[in-house]
Image (cartoon, rainbow, N blue to C red; front, side, top):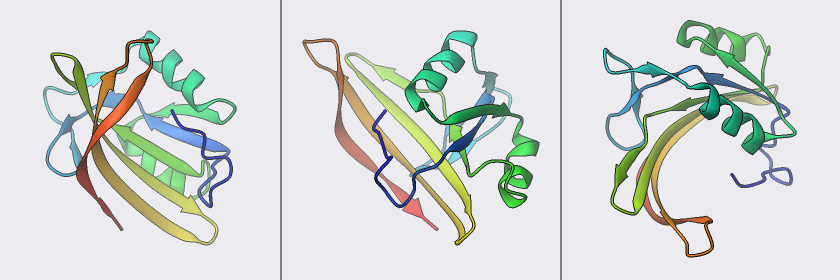
Length: 130
């Protein structure tokens, strides 16, 4: 994950919804019967990728109230990645609750493996900002 420490949206605390939803359009994540809890390895990878930020895993019903009362600065909502051959499409939403005002955005990107084992975004599939 990219470091956003120099951006206007540099969060010190992030809550992650502990269930993967499914992609339902341009950066929309929905939950239903096919939703599943994040596995331990997925949780650890997210913690490592977002370090040094404080990461808390929360239920869907805790996410929005936590942003509103500033328990955390942002909430990350993820859909189950779609794997096709050598690419992965990832859909996510980010809800913010900074003191200067609320924000939210969502999007989808396709990433591909590089020969050296790293990953690169190869396509932005659209999204939304609110």
